[in-house]
Image: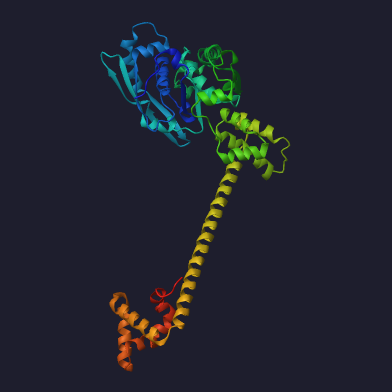
Length: 443
């Protein structure tokens, strides 16, 4: 059970972390419902391996939100009941939509003013062990906002802050906000005056980002909005140095070693420059931008005069660049690497088999050499021992029976039959007797 922050001052510095996919999900919550969800999201610890149950007191909830009236006690059960009925839709890919609830259960403790929540297991991949493609911000940025639309717009633009701008169609925004069927928003002026302008004003006054927007038309109808996002230095709550960030943020985005080496080799970046990039961009974004540069250098006829500029532009404006040929090249390189590894494995196995065969040949030759050097008495003794072992070994019964028949037919001893038999000639003396002779050879 995790301990909730007791005051608003403590809560504002907690981090809300969730996947970009969840951030773009379709749902409609009231301002209070949305803030309750975000408060509970901020209670998730970075090392959590499973979704845990969280408790929050009504008193704490009031303090965090700065609510002073007593009605919250009566309203809390209504809020939790409504939340349990709210569905969110998550586009896992172009053909798969996940419909789920925020919580698997909520439990209200009468007389204690405490509510228990457990997030839905379906949300686990969007909340735990996130290494790339996720959004992270301080809870305090949204607790001060008065509109649930302002919260959604803040989260969407915060996700694309490092790019500097992002285009959304009106239909896309309405769908994510769950207002696509509200007739009043068919008139763009209503959408702009009730949602966009209030959010623009609130974000500038109360959060760490601000934005401007441009309206784009298709024919005479406004169909798209282009948002320009930038840091809001007047209300900046970010830490100012790399050391402070590493100290306060438990899970910095660290590029893999091979990616760091490639960035260092391609652009001559220092370790500090790479660390600074990693604080602003996920490893996947850095990898994509690097691959765009490398692809243009290796696969196109156009020489990249300023590869660093192309790299930074790809980070800021990833939608400008076609990653399909880059992805094709990645797949081809991956296929070639898999084939190289398979061939390397085959050669190692073949080399090992050759070594084993060589060792067997060596042992066999030593056995043969020993056999050749035996005096008559030692040789007869070896034959007797081999015959005795063949007689006792059921797997050798067929060969032993043939030896008996040959001995009876030729009226010779079975030892002589062993030496004369076709089996001896076929298998070779060294192979037939090798196992016995090995015991008499010092290696």
